[in-house]
Length: 225
Image (cartoon, rainbow, N blue to C red; front, top):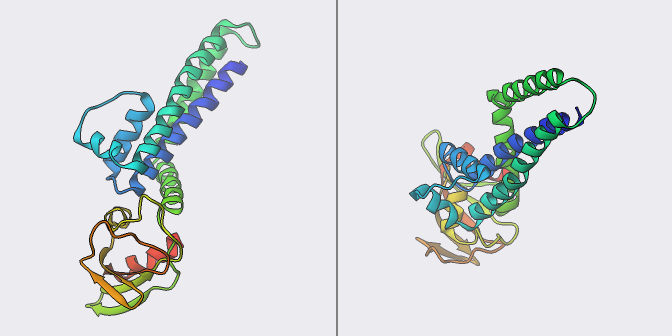
């Protein structure tokens, strides 16, 4: 019976980790459907040669997430198989029928919880937020509205408070991390770099001039600072 309990615990862990990996991939700019498929593909060890897969392996941050999912999957699957075999073969409390019923009931309960939409949104949201905090540069809390365009859209300024990591040091990488706003240029030391080149190296103190809905511009600093 202890092996059956181990099987159920490992099953919960693997399913939860899969949802967290999905949220982390979404944070790098992948659409939710693509992120879900790629996370499941990596976790199960099944490889698919597609353009989407190439976009994942060619991105350094996504490659790290996929590698972690593959590593956990390679440990979790054998553990599940061994645990379920020991649970039915090894002597212990409970008959084979009781162990079977407990295993089936546990699997059904786990699937009901994990496939529940609010639970899915919660787990994906946790993975998304964790990835944002680890990967995306920290911004100042205060957003400066430079120009109001209509009732909802604005041009604003966001200041970097620390050097970004390698993944999001360029404007191209930062654009992937901030899909809700558009970076128009960079202001640095009283100089403005409009239409800045993709390979510009962002650093602490830079001010990004961005365009988008004002609530989305504000959420960049509120959620990631």
